[in-house]
Image 1 (tube, rainbow, N blue to C red):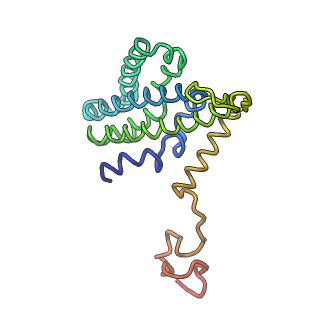
Image 2: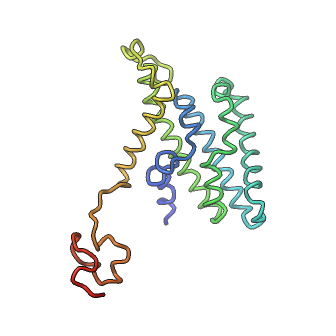
Image 3: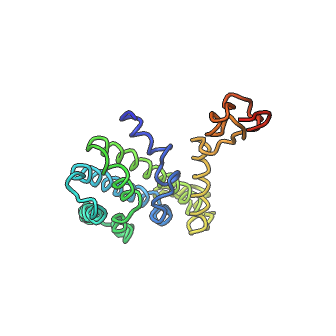
Length: 229
């Protein structure tokens, strides 16, 4: 996999939220507002990049038996730094995100990339992977928040949208609306990435077709039909 492919895979093909379905809790909780969603996405991306780099650099030093506690300690340190910076420079956003900032420590996306990628690859590749996954996560939050804020509150980034602001669909600002938008976006991404192609059943799709010599036959061929193998 090239570095560009490594970067792009997290945006659609392996989007952590809409394909891998990770980080669902902050996704549903912070997407009632575009500003909150972007703040959560940027904060999580920063922690993801820093933790991937640190874990990759220390992967040969960290004992295998205690790797998960070590990962959590490193991630918690970066989360604390991000919280302090946000508290100092964007206090309103800090207050708005509340406990979900602290919960980045146990975010499945960050722990998952640490375990599955950073602990097995070099620093540069791990950083690129983190950037791609972070962008994918932030884009997913932005799309969900845009739909929910526009339809549920009639605003975008706090600015009122004529007519919609007087006729909001309030359910989009509630949990059922969040799940509905989440499901629709997952379906859309699955369609775009062709994750759920309707394939014909037959020998050409069978992983063991080469064993009976029918790999090149028509889709409607039946394994074993007219064949003693």
